[in-house]
Amino acid sequence: MHKLTFHPINLLLLAISYFIALFFQHNWIDYILLLLLSAINWQVINKSLYWKNLLKFSLLMLPVSCAMLISSYYFAPADGLKIHLNNVSQINISLLLTFRLYIISIISFGYMLHLDKEKTLIELMRRKILSVNIGFAMLSVFNAFNYLTKEFNRIQIAYQMRYQRRYISPQIILPLLVSAARYAHNLSISMHNRGLNQHRSFYAPKINFTILDVIFILINLLALCCICFF
Image 1 (spheres, rainbow, N blue to C red):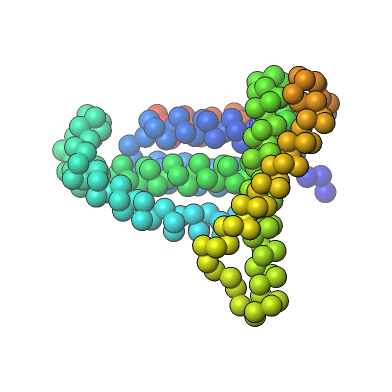
Image 2 (cartoon, rainbow, N blue to C red):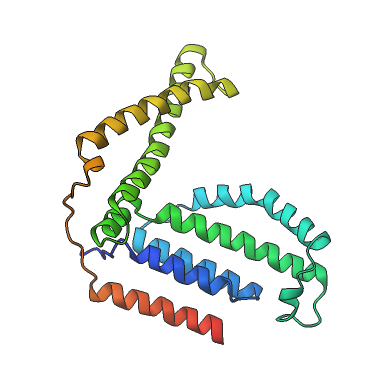
Protein backbone atom coordinates (compact mmCIF):
# COMPACT_ATOMS: atom_id res chain seq x y z
CA MET A 1 0.00 0.00 0.00
CA HIS A 2 1.38 3.39 -1.02
CA LYS A 3 1.97 5.73 1.92
CA LEU A 4 1.21 9.42 1.66
CA THR A 5 4.35 11.53 1.82
CA PHE A 6 4.24 15.27 2.29
CA HIS A 7 6.76 18.05 1.89
CA PRO A 8 8.66 18.76 5.15
CA ILE A 9 7.73 22.48 5.05
CA ASN A 10 4.01 21.71 5.06
CA LEU A 11 3.70 21.67 8.85
CA LEU A 12 5.68 24.91 9.10
CA LEU A 13 3.33 26.67 6.67
CA LEU A 14 0.29 25.28 8.47
CA ALA A 15 1.65 26.37 11.85
CA ILE A 16 2.01 29.97 10.62
CA SER A 17 -1.51 29.90 9.14
CA TYR A 18 -3.08 28.56 12.33
CA PHE A 19 -1.24 31.09 14.52
CA ILE A 20 -2.61 33.93 12.39
CA ALA A 21 -6.12 32.47 12.60
CA LEU A 22 -5.88 32.09 16.38
CA PHE A 23 -5.21 35.77 16.97
CA PHE A 24 -8.29 36.77 14.99
CA GLN A 25 -10.69 34.52 16.92
CA HIS A 26 -12.60 35.41 20.09
CA ASN A 27 -14.74 32.32 20.49
CA TRP A 28 -14.27 29.19 22.60
CA ILE A 29 -15.62 26.87 19.92
CA ASP A 30 -13.28 28.29 17.28
CA TYR A 31 -10.26 27.66 19.51
CA ILE A 32 -11.30 24.04 20.03
CA LEU A 33 -11.91 23.57 16.29
CA LEU A 34 -8.44 24.94 15.47
CA LEU A 35 -6.91 22.55 18.00
CA LEU A 36 -8.78 19.57 16.52
CA LEU A 37 -7.79 20.51 12.96
CA SER A 38 -4.18 20.83 14.07
CA ALA A 39 -4.33 17.36 15.63
CA ILE A 40 -5.66 15.98 12.34
CA ASN A 41 -2.76 17.62 10.48
CA TRP A 42 -0.24 16.08 12.88
CA GLN A 43 -1.77 12.65 12.42
CA VAL A 44 -1.96 12.87 8.62
CA ILE A 45 1.50 14.31 7.96
CA ASN A 46 3.50 12.71 10.76
CA LYS A 47 1.48 9.43 10.68
CA SER A 48 1.46 9.44 14.49
CA LEU A 49 0.11 11.57 17.30
CA TYR A 50 2.29 12.07 20.37
CA TRP A 51 -0.74 12.40 22.63
CA LYS A 52 1.16 11.41 25.79
CA ASN A 53 3.63 14.26 25.38
CA LEU A 54 0.77 16.62 24.54
CA LEU A 55 -1.10 15.53 27.67
CA LYS A 56 1.97 16.05 29.86
CA PHE A 57 2.53 19.50 28.38
CA SER A 58 -1.15 20.37 28.88
CA LEU A 59 -0.92 19.46 32.57
CA LEU A 60 2.26 21.51 32.96
CA MET A 61 0.48 24.50 31.43
CA LEU A 62 -2.34 24.44 34.00
CA PRO A 63 -0.43 26.40 36.72
CA VAL A 64 0.66 28.96 34.11
CA SER A 65 -2.93 29.28 32.92
CA CYS A 66 -4.17 29.81 36.48
CA ALA A 67 -1.59 32.56 36.97
CA MET A 68 -2.66 34.12 33.66
CA LEU A 69 -6.30 34.03 34.75
CA ILE A 70 -5.62 35.75 38.07
CA SER A 71 -3.33 38.40 36.60
CA SER A 72 -5.65 39.19 33.68
CA TYR A 73 -8.64 39.50 36.02
CA TYR A 74 -7.04 41.77 38.62
CA PHE A 75 -4.41 43.71 36.67
CA ALA A 76 -5.44 43.74 32.98
CA PRO A 77 -8.82 45.27 32.10
CA ALA A 78 -8.63 43.83 28.54
CA ASP A 79 -10.41 46.86 27.07
CA GLY A 80 -9.15 45.99 23.60
CA LEU A 81 -11.02 42.70 23.63
CA LYS A 82 -14.22 44.35 24.88
CA ILE A 83 -14.53 46.03 21.50
CA HIS A 84 -15.21 42.59 19.99
CA LEU A 85 -17.17 41.25 22.96
CA ASN A 86 -19.99 43.55 24.04
CA ASN A 87 -21.81 43.10 27.37
CA VAL A 88 -19.33 40.51 28.60
CA SER A 89 -18.09 40.51 32.19
CA GLN A 90 -14.45 40.86 33.13
CA ILE A 91 -14.22 37.28 34.41
CA ASN A 92 -15.47 35.89 31.09
CA ILE A 93 -12.94 37.99 29.20
CA SER A 94 -10.16 36.78 31.50
CA LEU A 95 -11.27 33.17 30.99
CA LEU A 96 -11.29 33.65 27.24
CA LEU A 97 -7.80 35.20 27.22
CA THR A 98 -6.50 32.40 29.41
CA PHE A 99 -8.05 29.74 27.20
CA ARG A 100 -6.55 31.42 24.12
CA LEU A 101 -3.08 31.33 25.71
CA TYR A 102 -3.63 27.70 26.67
CA ILE A 103 -4.65 26.67 23.15
CA ILE A 104 -1.83 28.68 21.53
CA SER A 105 0.70 26.96 23.81
CA ILE A 106 -0.62 23.47 23.02
CA ILE A 107 -0.76 24.10 19.27
CA SER A 108 2.76 25.61 19.29
CA PHE A 109 4.16 22.65 21.21
CA GLY A 110 2.26 20.20 19.00
CA TYR A 111 3.62 21.59 15.75
CA MET A 112 7.14 21.73 17.18
CA LEU A 113 6.78 18.14 18.44
CA HIS A 114 5.52 16.68 15.15
CA LEU A 115 7.70 18.78 12.85
CA ASP A 116 10.58 16.94 11.17
CA LYS A 117 13.16 19.50 12.27
CA GLU A 118 16.13 18.13 10.36
CA LYS A 119 14.38 17.87 6.98
CA THR A 120 12.66 21.24 7.45
CA LEU A 121 15.86 23.11 8.31
CA ILE A 122 17.78 21.44 5.48
CA GLU A 123 15.02 22.36 3.03
CA LEU A 124 15.04 25.98 4.27
CA MET A 125 18.81 26.11 3.81
CA ARG A 126 18.59 24.54 0.37
CA ARG A 127 16.06 27.18 -0.72
CA LYS A 128 18.32 29.90 0.81
CA ILE A 129 15.56 31.02 3.14
CA LEU A 130 17.87 30.27 6.07
CA SER A 131 21.63 30.73 6.07
CA VAL A 132 23.84 27.67 6.46
CA ASN A 133 25.47 28.93 9.66
CA ILE A 134 22.16 29.58 11.39
CA GLY A 135 20.60 26.37 10.05
CA PHE A 136 23.38 24.08 11.26
CA ALA A 137 23.47 25.92 14.59
CA MET A 138 19.76 25.20 15.06
CA LEU A 139 20.27 21.58 14.04
CA SER A 140 23.01 21.23 16.64
CA VAL A 141 20.69 22.67 19.31
CA PHE A 142 17.94 20.16 18.53
CA ASN A 143 20.46 17.32 18.47
CA ALA A 144 21.86 18.52 21.80
CA PHE A 145 18.47 18.02 23.46
CA ASN A 146 18.34 14.43 22.21
CA TYR A 147 21.94 13.84 23.29
CA LEU A 148 21.37 15.18 26.82
CA THR A 149 18.17 13.15 27.14
CA LYS A 150 20.11 9.97 26.30
CA GLU A 151 22.85 10.96 28.76
CA PHE A 152 20.26 11.49 31.49
CA ASN A 153 18.80 8.04 30.82
CA ARG A 154 22.28 6.46 30.94
CA ILE A 155 22.94 8.06 34.32
CA GLN A 156 19.62 6.77 35.65
CA ILE A 157 20.30 3.24 34.38
CA ALA A 158 23.80 3.18 35.90
CA TYR A 159 22.47 4.41 39.25
CA GLN A 160 19.65 1.85 39.24
CA MET A 161 22.07 -0.98 38.51
CA ARG A 162 24.19 0.03 41.51
CA TYR A 163 21.64 1.20 44.10
CA GLN A 164 18.36 -0.32 42.78
CA ARG A 165 16.57 3.05 42.69
CA ARG A 166 16.32 6.18 40.57
CA TYR A 167 18.65 9.11 41.12
CA ILE A 168 16.63 12.28 41.65
CA SER A 169 18.84 15.13 42.84
CA PRO A 170 20.01 18.55 41.62
CA GLN A 171 23.56 17.12 41.62
CA ILE A 172 22.71 15.30 38.38
CA ILE A 173 23.24 18.66 36.66
CA LEU A 174 27.01 18.31 37.12
CA PRO A 175 27.50 15.21 34.93
CA LEU A 176 25.03 16.64 32.43
CA LEU A 177 27.10 19.83 32.21
CA VAL A 178 30.22 17.75 31.60
CA SER A 179 28.39 15.85 28.84
CA ALA A 180 27.17 19.13 27.33
CA ALA A 181 30.72 20.54 27.30
CA ARG A 182 32.02 17.37 25.65
CA TYR A 183 29.23 17.51 23.06
CA ALA A 184 29.93 21.19 22.29
CA HIS A 185 33.66 20.48 21.87
CA ASN A 186 33.11 17.59 19.47
CA LEU A 187 30.49 19.58 17.58
CA SER A 188 32.80 22.57 17.08
CA ILE A 189 35.54 20.28 15.74
CA SER A 190 33.07 18.60 13.38
CA MET A 191 31.74 21.89 12.00
CA HIS A 192 35.26 23.26 11.54
CA ASN A 193 36.36 20.14 9.66
CA ARG A 194 33.31 20.41 7.39
CA GLY A 195 34.30 23.95 6.47
CA LEU A 196 31.28 25.81 7.81
CA ASN A 197 33.57 28.63 8.93
CA GLN A 198 34.76 28.96 5.30
CA HIS A 199 31.23 29.32 3.84
CA ARG A 200 31.43 26.03 1.97
CA SER A 201 28.34 24.63 0.28
CA PHE A 202 26.71 21.30 1.04
CA TYR A 203 24.64 18.78 -0.87
CA ALA A 204 21.00 18.05 -0.07
CA PRO A 205 18.51 16.11 -2.19
CA LYS A 206 15.85 18.27 -3.84
CA ILE A 207 12.29 17.85 -2.58
CA ASN A 208 9.55 19.33 -4.74
CA PHE A 209 6.02 20.25 -3.79
CA THR A 210 3.52 17.81 -5.25
CA ILE A 211 -0.15 18.17 -6.10
CA LEU A 212 -0.89 16.33 -2.84
CA ASP A 213 0.86 19.07 -0.85
CA VAL A 214 -1.05 21.80 -2.67
CA ILE A 215 -4.41 20.07 -2.11
CA PHE A 216 -3.64 19.54 1.56
CA ILE A 217 -2.70 23.21 2.09
CA LEU A 218 -5.79 24.41 0.19
CA ILE A 219 -8.07 22.19 2.29
CA ASN A 220 -6.63 23.67 5.47
CA LEU A 221 -6.91 27.23 4.19
CA LEU A 222 -10.53 26.59 3.23
CA ALA A 223 -11.24 25.22 6.70
CA LEU A 224 -9.57 28.27 8.30
CA CYS A 225 -11.63 30.63 6.15
CA CYS A 226 -14.83 28.84 7.20
CA ILE A 227 -13.89 29.16 10.87
CA CYS A 228 -12.80 32.79 10.64
CA PHE A 229 -15.62 34.21 8.53
CA PHE A 230 -18.64 32.04 9.35
